[in-house]
Image (spheres, rainbow, N blue to C red):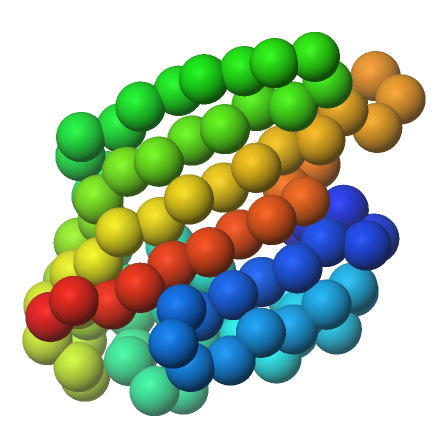
Length: 98
């Protein structure tokens, strides 16, 4: 995936994982684990993009129509850090609202 080796993944008010294992333990809401939700299709709205120096910041609302859990909605914030010639997700934070 596109995660920085020292990145963090935060499920706001729930849990946080750091480093490579974060990809496996708690995926981003846009890649909801199939075990709990089945197939899903995610859409993003109200996206805002900003940047400074080696960092890109994205905030947006998301909605995932899932096979087993119904519609899951929330908001996310991602900070991408430049590493060499590409950007990787350094901070991925989300909160599920419905």
